[in-house]
Length: 503
Image (cartoon, rainbow, N blue to C red; front, side, top):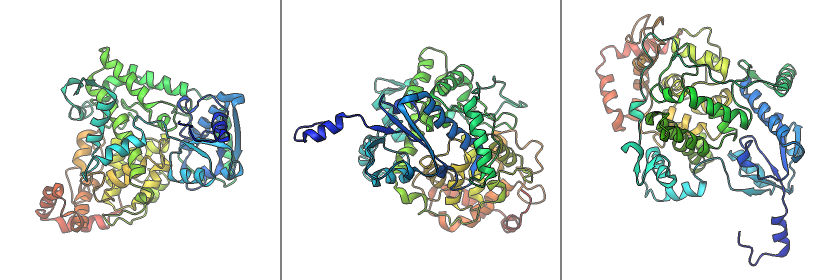
């Protein structure tokens, strides 16, 4: 920083190390520059809305483990509200927080704010890229290519490794026929310790005293709560699942909740892993001949493409984005089965398996989120704001910045096409192709009318009928709408779905 013209007092102030308030989402080494630190565990974080117990456990375990690691360098407080520790004018610095609410909080108190970290592309870099678009849509693919070119990741000079930017077409294999699992070794699970036991006791007491509302199962902890655990999880993914990740990235099996996924989204969002380091470690496997390009590119696109993209869209689209869009007129409340993660009365295998998996783990992979949960919510017109908050609260990797572009934009098309060009709705045929869910289900994915009519198949046509006035100008929906208009039994299907009780 240029100090010419600044007073001696100002220069001394900048030279004196301040305590750094380390927030949840900033718990890894990349956010620690070696000075004194402040960590605050606030109960208010956990009592705003019902939260998955596994998420509450993970967040508490992570911050308590970080306080223990930092030892005497950390001042650790356990309070009801942050205001009890962070007063206006406090002599603290903070790396720019990962939510609108937190950024407003630190600025209102006059804290010294450092540029954000934890992403491959900085906020100024994204703003500069967006300013060059000349009114064009901020497409993920264009952003992803720009990041590849700027960083040199998976590049050969000015050309993409292998001659293609995107290997998504190679990463859409259905699961192997007749397989109950992919046959991969169990992921390396973290070992719980005394801190985890203490967290579990505290959550039991808080819930018993009515201080928090917790949903779902807790334990054993399945996601990394320390940087060392996160690095071990990354190494295990590379050794046992990376090769199969690409081909089966979109596949679903009822008996295999992890498939070949990395399970790194939660530790990444806690700040325990540096995303660029993780990507470069995976890319090195390709260059060493130990991993296929399709898998490595798919992982790279998820991290330096989509993850960075939704982070920057969170800031670029502004704080009102989450609540100011409802292009499809969706206002239905979330059903009890979603709110309580109770799958006992759900009859459709795909939805029952996904909701029950969420109850057990607080996690589901991206196709379950988009094409089962999101598809169902889209078809049934669930309120997008309530759904966005539910995704934040019920997933261990849920954060305020992650979900708006994913849920409001990609999944529910509530923004009318800012993020995705068309609604991601489909009938049961897609689920039947990409999973084993439909085998043995009481519903038939090929049937839209009658007792065995698939709720997703029939629901797809009822959805198109409901939103047709709002999407008829979307050229990408012309063919589906034309197909809907040709259905001779459309009215019967719509009437059936309006009064459906079993799903």
